[in-house]
Image (cartoon, rainbow, N blue to C red; front, top):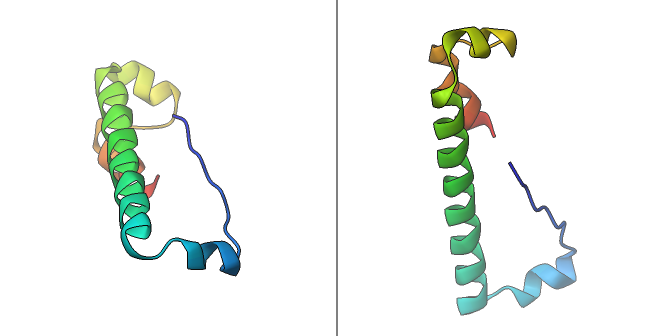
Length: 68
C-alpha cells in the first residue's frame, strides 16, 4: 500500500484555501478510501492459515483497515 505524506508549513497551509483546499481534501479522502478498499480486499483473499502467519484472524481485517 503506497502512502504519500507531505508535511506542510503554516505558509503552505494558507495557500490551500477556497476551492483548492476543498479539492485537495477530497483527493485525500478518496485516496484513503481506495487504499482501505484495496487493503481489505487483499486481506480478505488470504486463507485463514495465511492470516495466522501474519498474526491476524479474519475478524481483525476491519480493525487493521480502520487504523491505517
